[in-house]
Image (cartoon, rainbow, N blue to C red; front, side):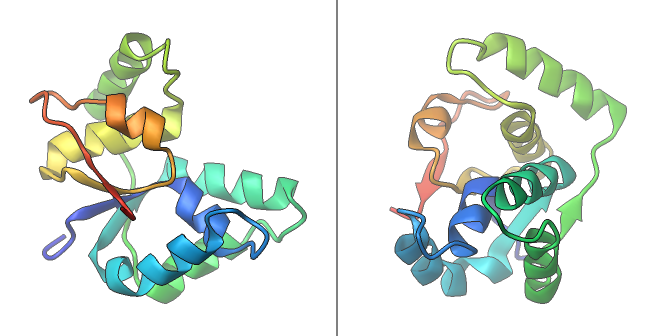
Length: 139
């Protein structure tokens, strides 16, 4: 994952694929400078695919976008899933969904503190094992 220093959440994928989304312009503009730096998880892809389909798009669009941009989609091992469960209990009041938990857990594995997301509230609150806040992109 050399050169990958940004975690990609579902919300920019959803926004990028829907011109009516309030975040479309900001995510589209940020995409060119961030896509080749991003890494994401399977859970994020599932969430984005579900939301895109729910809004009338094709379920495959997020996957096709990730493949086209060459963004790695990481599968997590059991110990990281256990960390996700702990994170979801810890941030139950935020609330933290599973896709967000996978990104926070992956941030600990890869040492990444930047996240491409529109979820300002969640990622301003979440902390990984080291307690360091995330830098949320786009600014």
